[in-house]
Length: 519
Image 1 (cartoon, rainbow, N blue to C red):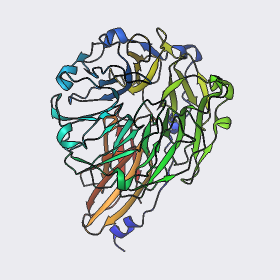
Image 2: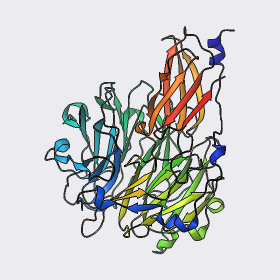
Image 3: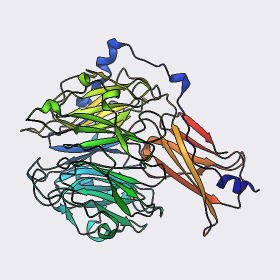
Image 4: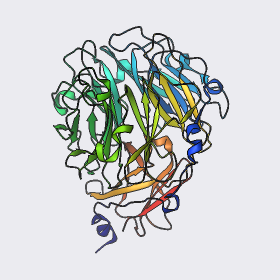
């Protein structure tokens, strides 16, 4: 039996890679109220716009995190278009430089979401702006050195939509990033018939075709505010979770591996869902969901609205485990908007932050088993009302996660906020390679390796990693793996190459490294 055949016999491997060295890391209770410190005045120029979402990315190739704010509009009515703003990182304790006009020129948008990805495989980041109230989503092609060109008219489907959220990933397994967009349909988000979730397929050069009619379920979703790519059944293709604030339940669309999706009623039935985030909470190898602002408002009692934890039952359905994993007294029914996972104490398990419009932004700490405890307050500085979005990134390169907040929905513009990690631990937790798959492409004569790699924070993006690579033997050079959505990576090599001691190695931005042998 050849070595190649032995590789092909490798099945799905589920491993726990918890860092034993960091298992018992904890922080003094006295300093938890100052985990992050407000440094907005140092880093950000005056903003004061209605910001819906925050995006972080290195858009000019200097290995520092830059900031993009999706601005525009109102809540239940269009409002006035605004400049979505772009700021370039100048280094630790230095004010960000605004290059909004350089990127967008004089264009204003009803923008809800901005994403930065390489859509034409030229290793230069591009910018996609999702707009609301039946307007045209925009595409700006990166030219290098922070320069961009609007190619919307030639490279995007000419489709007006009300985009609540969008994500990019390779849904049809052809090596490029496609776009899925949640469209709440015509009219106000509070009162309409809903819209279909849109799918635009990439031709490999950054030109997109609308294939919604043939490849997506014909379902109208009202007030779709968030969607996420995630591989819920561990088959290494990208499924889609779609929120619905005014439906009986949010939806999961299951991918057949070639970009054709079917609706599956896999979630418990709740309404009023703004947002959710994906993570393996209980370390069983399957991705779970935490939902934000979920549950029906009963008799105008806003306290009846709370978050939920849905555990993935081996890729078959999701089970509501909120009561057993999260004390009801700590699950506060506020008007919350956004959630992000982070391993704030670097103990190897995922904690998470919740942004709130009406209350204090707060931290939930994982005890290592998937049970959560409320830690509050955690921010040193002025209160943070009207938080609509949060993003995590290491702004000052000290290996600690910082918080960037998008503020909005007030009578007057509220400034964006930056909180720098103060008393949180430096990132010492090793990456997690939870499972992998190998198979042969007979037509091309190659072996394909796919793996899920994550770092207990969200979102995981390519810039969060120094390298993710496949190593075939002691003498061969590493083969770079390519991110294709969620936490999934892929690489291929000729089936004629010598293979022994093959392993996947992942090194995060802090230099923490994990290698997983493929036997």
